[in-house]
Length: 384
Ligand SMILES: Cc1ncc(COP(=O)(O)O)c(C=O)c1O
Image 1 (cartoon, protein in one colour):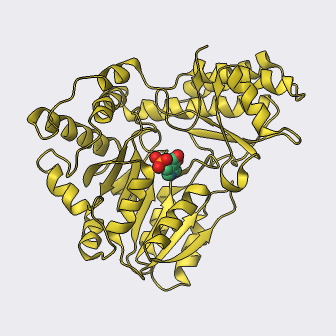
Image 2 (cartoon, rainbow, N blue to C red):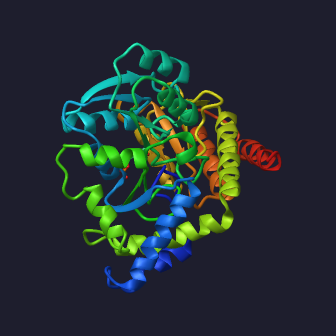
Image 3 (cartoon, rainbow, N blue to C red):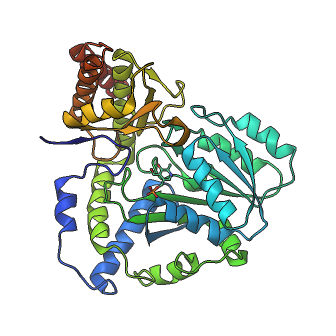
């Protein structure tokens, strides 16, 4: 049975990415590989409106988050973490682990942060060295109004760094690093970039470089100064995940040839179809309208439906989705739709979801569910 992998990363990969990943090894300090690294960095920078340095780190997204923290902060620095879910909590945990003086602005899970509330918070507190926040919260399927939140930070007291976890949104949705005033953003190869897991991405602007020079948290493997000086030679300080980079190059070329506007429209329309289809299946979405993620859709499990057997039944039909994380384990389900995704993948997933719900006594009509989703997808595409 073929598997329909609909978790929010790693994502299914196009055949040409898989082929590229099986290319023979090359000298990671040779001219040919330098071209590959430079091509990936400039491609990513162009897609996210960034004039700063795009560093490719071997590690997962959490490694890139840790790198962002240890490179920009000193123990005792006052840091505000705006958390809207499990990954915001992770950012706070990392900063605390390295001795930052973390204050939290905790938003109820399932909601987005409110720029006006942030403005009020900043105005009534001493200035922070940095504000850490999540663009797209994968644990709840909520997208923050990042442009407005960054503007609130920029116009507030002091001159805090704006440090963004863009891991599950970058590449799939609008993001303008320079124009929005973001100083540092991280992502990871296995999300919308159509790569395998293994490469963390850190994009760093001028304001962040000044902080990096002053920062005193311990760093060695993740040292951005090292990474930047090697990147200037088309290299990384340490042996990189060569095969992952071969694939990432091809994934990125696909995004570049599709063009960002079309990529964003495709994700938006697919997300719309997933949302409407899940509602047609009788599920209640977690995220409020206006803050629904284009890359992951979360819905509440119906009362009395136990996640473990339900999930096992979906998997026996070839559909692999994600459940809830941390305090929402067993409470929600999550559909990933980022990267190499087209409507039939989601239509099929909705049908299997509805069939399995029916088997468990929550009877939607699988055909109507899929049709409602497809209609919403098609009209969202036409509307753009
Ligand atoms: C928003 C967000 N932040 C951080 C991470 C952590 O990335 P990784 O699992 O690659 O360490 C993820 C992964 O799902 C994520 O979606």
